[in-house]
Structure formats: C-alpha cells, structure tokens
Image 1: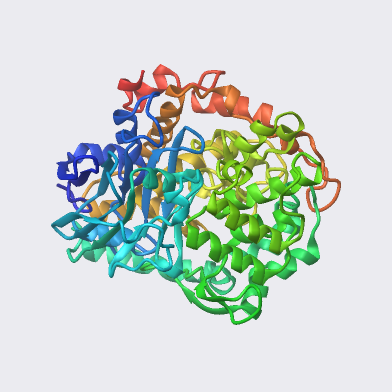
Image 2: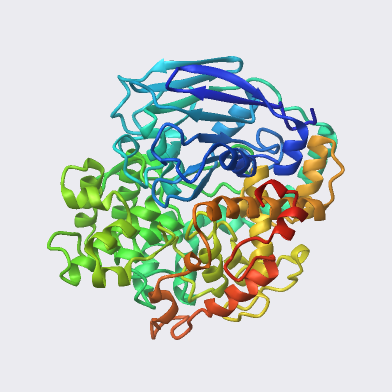
Length: 602
C-alpha cells in the first residue's frame, strides 16, 4: 500500500451492532483519492433511487484523505457523505477541526455506518479498539455540554428530532460543523449520538523529508496572503461584499445596507466581542474566532464566533445588525446542531411570508428577539409551523403554495449560501450545477472574480465579475479542482494563500510515492465531479433542475454595487454543458464517462 493510506475502512452496522474492517485496494484510492471522492464511489454502489435518506439502508460515511494527519498545512479535515434528507440528492459536507487527523492516525481512511440502533449509541475508536457504547444518557444533550474525553463528532437535539438541516458538529465550543444538507438528521435517524476517536499512529509518508521541505516553502506565502483572514476572520468580507453587491440583504431583495454591514463585519467583531482565535490542526491561517458577551440578553460564554456565512444568514439576510444577537443565534444553532445557512434562510423566508400576509405568526425584519424565539421553536418542533420550518424553505413554500413559491431561495432544495449571483455571475452557474444544490464551495469561483487568479487553470488574471466570457470553462475547471480539495482534504482558503494544483500534486506524490502529474490529478477531479453528477442523474436530475429562483434571474435591485446586473444563466449553462461534454439535457455523455474510467455508469 502506498504512503498516505492504510487500506482500511471501518464498517459499522447499527442494527446488528457489528463492526468489521474492509480492505481497499490501491487502485481505488488512485482513482478516487479519498474524502468525498471515495465517498461518491461507495454511495453510488451501495444505494439506489429507492433508498430512503432517513432509512437504515442510507449509509452515513466519514472519509479522510491522504493529506489528513500529515504535515500538509490546513489538511486536518474530513468529509461526510450520504443521501440528503433535505434535498433527496447527493450530500457531502466538509469539516475541519482535529477529529479527521485523529481518525487517520487511528489507522482508517473512513467509517461506513448502516442500519439503525434500537436505542441511542455512540461509537468509540481508540486505535484498533473499536466498540459501540450505550448513549441513552447522552440523548438530549447539546453539543457544548457533551464531553466524552476524546476528539468527537456528534449531533445535538436538532439531529435527534430529525430537523432536515441538522448538522454534525465537531470541536465542542470551537464548533466546527459538517453543516449542509442535513447529515445530522441522517445520524439522528440512526440513533447514533457521537463518534469519539483517539489515534496514536503515524500516517505513512513515502518521502517525509521532501514533503516537509515543500510544505515549509509554501507556509510563509500562505501566512502573508491570508493575514487579513487571520486578523479579521472570514467575517472581514462583510463590508466588501456589501459594497460590490454580493451580500444578500432582506431575503435577496435589497442592494445596499452599508451602515448595517459595518456593524456586523469581522473588524467590528475584533473591536468588540472577540477574545481569542483558534485554528484547525496545522493551519497557518487561523480564521476561527472566540467571542464572549458578558451580560445582557445576548450573553454567551467564550465560544466560537460567527463566520461570514452566519453573519450574513442571520444578519443582513434578516436585516439584523446587532452583532451580539447574531453571536447568540450562532451559539444557539451550534448547541442544537443546526446549519446556520439554512436556519438563516428559513428565518428570512418566514419574515417575508409574514410581511406578505401568508402566515400570521413569524419573526419580523430586523428583530433579533423574534429570530431567536423562532430558532428555539424550530428546535423544539412542538407546533405545526415550527415542524414545517424544520423541513427547510422548499417545504414551507410548497405547503403555502402560490405566491410563496416566488421568494423561496434555494436550488434543488438547498438554501442559497451567502453570495449573490448578481454580484458575481460565475456563482449563478456554480449554484445551478453544484451537485449538492446551491453551494459556493463546489466551484468557489467568486474568489477568481474578486481576489485571486488561477494561472494553472488558464486564468492568469482576475476574471470580470459581470462578464460571461469563458465563465463556463472557468466554473467547470474550478469544480474539478474543488473536488480534489474535498478528496485530498485540504482547506480551500489555501487558494487565497497561493496554493495551485502543482503544489497539491507535489505533496500527494511525496506522501504516496506515486508519480502523478498535475494533469492527471485534475482529470481525477473531473472524474469525481462527474461521478457525483451521475449519482444525481440516477435520481432524475437533469437540465430542468439546473436553475435558480427568478428573484436572482429577473429582479434588479436598483442600488448598490451590482444594482442592475442579472446573470445570463441560459447562455452560460449551454456553454457549460458543451464544455463538459454533457448532452443538452445535462447528462454526461457515454464517451465522456468512458474517457474518465467510469464505463460502469453508462
């Protein structure tokens, strides 16, 4: 077996409470690498269109990559994969912290969990000692109060109660989240409360000296180029994104909110409630915030501060400009184990529905107390509207019907992340074609229109944000590249630090002993992305689903940095399908699949 891999995956059947080890051959790793790439292969092979996302046959899978637990910077990450209960489609969620490295150092590339426990259990891994333990006394605890004495992923009450955007949390009060697409609900349906890991082994590396030297050459550049993120966190971008028309405001209707944005930006956090910083293992960036509010209605203990997505979702999207209140809402979501992006989308949707007279009860614009009340109500799941809100924006809009469908901001059932495609046109194409629904991270393309070039993808200059020329090519190439980050397990913020495919393949070859080229590596990313697309094609996804709400495509905001711009999704999508080698219906062609080594999917 090459360096970087143990060749072992844990299989856990909760129905029978049996644990086994499956051996993985090296060619499988070389073809799918790890992380969500390896997860895509397993999920495609072990599910069908009839698989119930909350049923015992939907495998919940945790995978690391060959970088995890090594000296590669910002790589202590893991992926969670399953069929989503929120969208019914492909689901993956990426998470940092320190749990992934412990799992790899325990001697495993991943865990595949099937079945459903008769009563709550948790999984304990201590190198080769693996066992299921009683968790009935832990059921109901929130993610901050749960402490099992080891690195841990867990669910909170949201996952236990089946809220369809429940997250899987990691890091206790440092609160890293595998948040999107409801994977915490899958874990809750299996009655699995937590997975603890202690790992003491050293991940095998073919050329440790070469790896260390290469990484050390890159670290100073990463530190310098990401210094602003270290100082201000991801929230430092709030004011900038408001200025250029990318920040979502008032459920995606408003173009300017300058004073409000200044009140909730990362710089304001640094000046007011910030008391410390933290980072994932071996990360030179350190974007994590520790905040504290000592008194008042929004008092919170020292814990994870809100990142950009949360500041926008529970702030600007809802017209809430009270930073302490947003920090409180972030803590509430983290404790319950709820995705803050979807939670903010749901709260904003309810605000607009109430304003339009479509519901009598609901939170109100700019009122943090009503938003906090509704977060608690959703988590409690004790009334009809709260239970409906626990199913996400698409479900609420379909129940209300009529005009309620007009302002449901989702793609394929996943609520929008906090970047407006009218500000950066590539985001429109990226959201529409993302395999898990609306997602800025599956292409991460807006950074190539705002901050950094991608010279090794053929884009030596920052792309214009509102043009459509070469956007299809750029998004497709970026998606292939991002699939590699999710397979190797490397933080995408390192792109801002200057990391390119040539760095990634050099580190991979040092770890594994392979002689892979950058071209072969990028082809592997293309294979992984198309495999995920084919998983969705089997579930009925095609061109009809690669679309965005009309609010994005037809509504000009009339103010702000992108006051009158509308993304030309029709033409970009046609160019994208042609560039990808997909049919006009958005289906990968047999010739393409064969060229990628995916003949079995034809």
